[in-house]
Image (cartoon, rainbow, N blue to C red):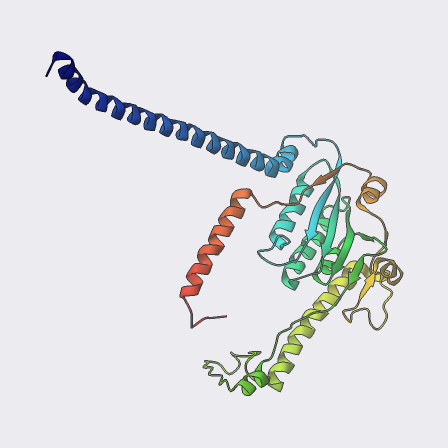
Amino acid sequence: MDNQSKAEVTREPGWEREVIEKLALAAVAEQAKARRWGIFFKSMMFAYLIVLSAVAIYPKISRDFGVDSKDHTAVIDVVGMIAEGKEANADSIIESLRNAVKDEHTKGIILHANSPGGSPVQSSYVYEEIRKIKKEHPNLPVYAVVSDICASGCYYIVSASDKIFVNPSSLVGSIGVLMDGFGFVDVMQKLGVERRLFTAGAHKAMLDPFSPSKEEETHYVQGLLNQVHQQFIGAVKAGRGDRLKEYPDMFSGLVWTGEEGVKLGIVDAVGNQDYVAKELIGAETLVDFSQQEHLLDKIAGKLGASFGQAIGSMVQGVSLH
């Protein structure tokens, strides 16, 4: 073997190492590039979350630090189903009312009402808070402005306000109480399904949809509904006073248009938020005092609901309702 051939043989191992080194360096460079893109996208997501948080808390910051430091009309939403855990719940509405009252630049409050109603208990809490505010701050007017609908529990709430304004096509009223359900007894008999129910307490299974209704229990439940209905009627009469032009079906659960509601005295006049703020309160700048659920609370709530659903699916059987 000549000297040239020996030199080529001795170069072969070095050549392999060089290729391996190049591949390794290329892999490292690719990983570094991937990390840089990962950091970039994470930074963009972080910035996005900051923007969302800023948008969510801006109304509170503007109120606390004087962005809206001139005289204004506070607007508070009573929107959606009224129930604990929903957006329209007593705690959030009451907190909104109290924040509006504490603001020295608030010259009046508008309740933006657009709800089919809901819990009589939650509605009663808000009703009593409005009455309390009117008593403690007689010079601070509280008006309600109805958009699409203000029925049942929503009307319960706004009946405490000084005046109620509507659109001619708004739906208002439904001064009644509802409890509904289903009965599947005949269906089970036709399918040959036997109901096996064990209770401790003669009426523990009252209103069970798979058992025949009992006259005694039906009468008892109707009595409960009548009591709540009378409380509702009493609240409306106390709030509206002699403005009500009572007739036999006023408290029957019927609803009326805003135009008809003015004639019956269940509302006062046609008007919108801008009109009430400018012409009645005298502060045409509107500031939203409605409590908004924080972004992190929403995320935590969804995670909690998912976790609770998973746990609930594993725990079945005995329960105390």
